[in-house]
Length: 288
Image (cartoon, rainbow, N blue to C red; front, top):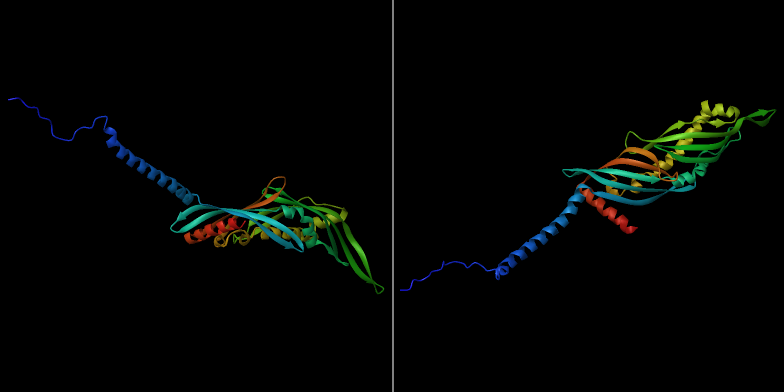
């Protein structure tokens, strides 16, 4: 009998010539999984980034002001950034800037409309020139004016007018922005500099009620334009106007002496308000 050889019954080991036939399906699967993973990463990453650093850039808004027939434009824009997000309540940082350069260029006319006066028996005021420049974090207003005071009396049945005091003066007034206690309005804190004036007029402006009256009118005229130019309802979309508080304000030099006011604040918004804000911001950019 011939001894016989037996072989182990089982799956044959693939030779090198056939190995690619078995590896190809696995490689294809790996490639598909890798591609799928890449797609997931690419799409998921921006969502996570947006969720943590959500930012809304509010486009420039031109706010027209009419101050005693003097028309000026304040250009304002804002940046809103998500700070914290917890249980449906979002806290966002607000940064708003308003360009006051048009007020700077027309300050003489604005103050003249507010202060010029010509009483026959009283004060006569004429604003001759006014400037407003940055003095970070404040602004410096310098006003050149002519002032006269007259008194009237009847002499032998006839009214006579007499000038009591008069002359030219230069009044510097430093104005520092601050926030009212309700955190919704701005105010200006005045600080009078060294007043230059002719003769007895200087003493009258430094210590009398006339100087205080002029300072207050200058402050109010500039504050009026400032408050209108930083009106949140004029700059922010409706979804961001509720639950807004202003936390700080300062003047800065926007370049070449251009006066810009910066506001820092906080917005509290629900998820629904965030969605509405996103839609309203997109609509504003689309309308430009």
